[in-house]
Length: 143
Ligand SMILES: [Zn+2]
Image: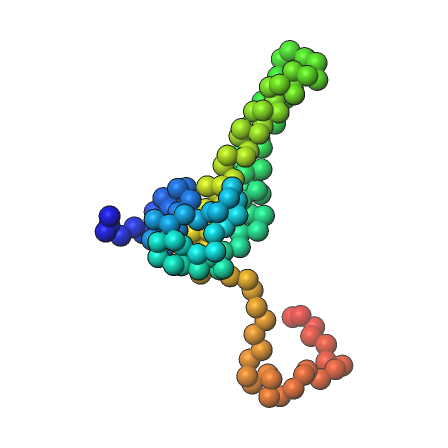
């Protein structure tokens, strides 16, 4: 497949398939959520990828609402015992929240790759470094 995808298409396609964001062929994960060290097909080093809690956050926000609504609906409609929730609401919550985490992480890693997102760094400009530290006693009034 020599077709060139736009960044947005590649983020969705390769991210959802959990494939390398550059070539779309190599696997992104070694385990369920553990990133492989590099792409087995093109050799892209995945060290840049660090979506942290992003996938869990988005899945919680997006899928947690229908999962909680289902539990509330069961409770309000039938007022069942606790064990009915253990057998219905809990599996529903797990099925709506756990499977989407992997493709969400794949999409965030692909997004990091295409947008060159990385951890923020403090950069000291050369001129400021030559002048030395700011003079104490000066207060910025902010306006
Ligand atoms: Zn690759």
